[in-house]
Image (cartoon, rainbow, N blue to C red; front, top):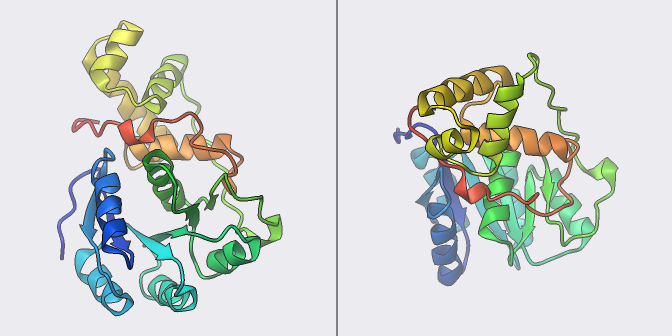
Length: 238
């Protein structure tokens, strides 16, 4: 079984075009906290590679062979329910979006998406949200699976909220300390408390939970929320 570095989201990339595959590999590997773990060019190889590479998420190209790709997504969701699927598509047709969501896809973005929005969509989808590209007209609410509302069980302190706001801006522990005039060790303590109270796996997960909640817990119909998500630092100690 493949080993997983702490705090790293492992992403499998499924696209027909070699040029698109290379572009996606660069986008994922240049996003902090994410790593490409395979690029199967054919659907029949995808399920086998999912089993061996153990990704956290799969990004699929949803183009001309949409029916076959959606069938593969259904099969993938059935066999690996913990793996999140995000689609990159050419169609803006709400009916196609609905079909993709019904097949188990939790993120539907257009091919011209930005690295920031792709990274955020993967994290938000893993957190249980449904993400639809802001360039697409709102899908009928009945077609979008409702996300669970995010409510921290234990309120954050004023200082913890300040640190969380800095995390959302993608700041490192050192920079947070400078901005808030506290030591780096104190920052680490606050980050650990934040993760515990939010029930988050890591910093990126905490950011995803908060931003998804601010967007209403359902389908994402705005942009990247002013977020430099690709810059969320994966500090080793928090």
